[in-house]
Amino acid sequence: MGVRPDRVASAIRREVSNIIQEEIKDPRVGFTTITKVEITPDLRHAKIYYSVLGDEKQKLSTQIALRNAKGFIRKLIGSRLKLRLTPDIAFKMDKTVEYSDKIDRILEKINRDKKERGE
Image 1 (cartoon, one colour):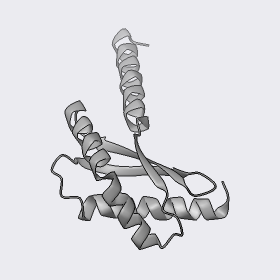
Image 2 (cartoon, helix red, strand yellow):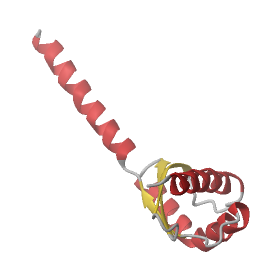
Image 3 (cartoon, one colour):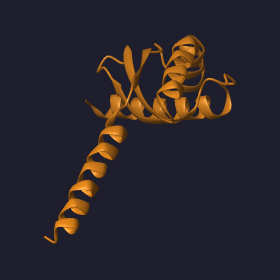
Image 4 (cartoon, one colour):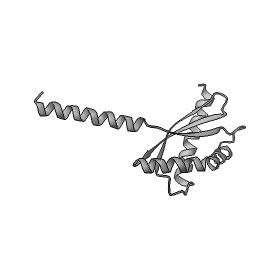
């Protein structure tokens, strides 16, 4: 990715974070963090990765709420960033935090088991 797509992706990440925190009034949206934005070199498509603090029910309701608010969010991105073309956006759940937590729990269990065996 070139310099411009990187800058646009960073700006979209900032704006979407602000929009979710300050403008989306949907109670289904949980505590959501925008973790990354990937944008195509032609700036026409953006994948917005997010993580949600909560259980599976909260994650699912947030996913539905973001899908429903997609047009509203895209419209705000276009007006705030003054791009010639506003990219089509898609929200994707970022599971790296969950994966990292799972690995940490497994490692902690291994260490506890070793201590119990006296290793």
